Image 1 (cartoon, rainbow, N blue to C red):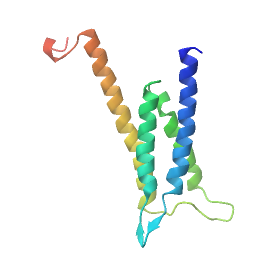
Image 2 (cartoon, helix red, strand yellow; image 1 turned 90 degrees about the vertical axis):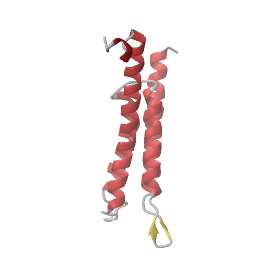
Image 3 (cartoon, rainbow, N blue to C red; image 1 turned 135 degrees about the vertical axis):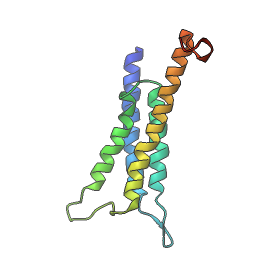
Image 4 (cartoon, rainbow, N blue to C red; image 1 turned 120 degrees about the vertical axis):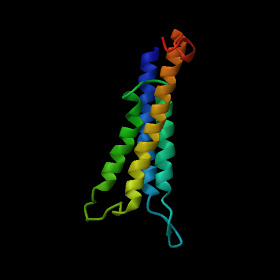
Length: 135
């Protein structure tokens, strides 16, 4: 198996993992501990998506490293829709906004960091750095 085929296979598996993270974040968004909301789905979305984007960044650059987040987003969008009887999975409150912000914000920070790290490493390999005036 050549490297390109293996990389595509791994990206597909990471996208399926994005679907799983989406299901978990939707499932654990509305629990309560006593009378206090405990939206563990927000933490699951942030940590899960950030980890998946970080792993995907090892095999592909942007925008392909965002495939797991697209899988997560598909599940979240499906969860936002109503069911056949008019039931909904999400209530219109701060938890939904927190889920979307954490699910996109954390991987964006990871993607920015890994992209910046790649540019710094590439510049160091070319001999460009602060010691030579940026030339």
